[in-house]
Length: 94
Image (cartoon, rainbow, N blue to C red; front, side, top):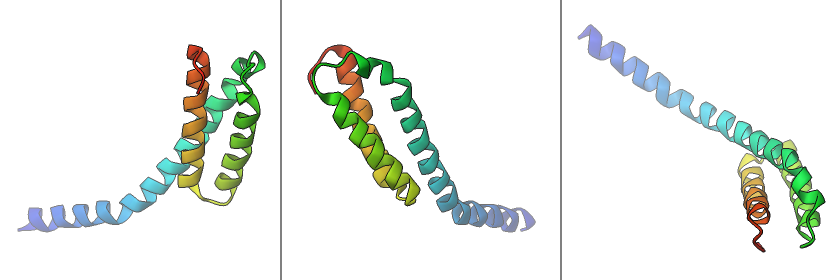
């Protein structure tokens, strides 16, 4: 009986704490994506497709979303920018 009560307490605590962890993970992913984009700026120096300006705009929008605690929007913006950077790196036209 004690084990099942203890297990129930742990399960309940984990479920209540999970939204906090999700928010932290989103904030971390947003910042990680921004760091990856900033580390890829050298690639943008040789860009002739005009994507450099779009990436700069995306960075500004993502930072604004991050500052407003809209982590989902920040992740959405930075994920697209990272995909565009990967396409540039491959020589493709995103």
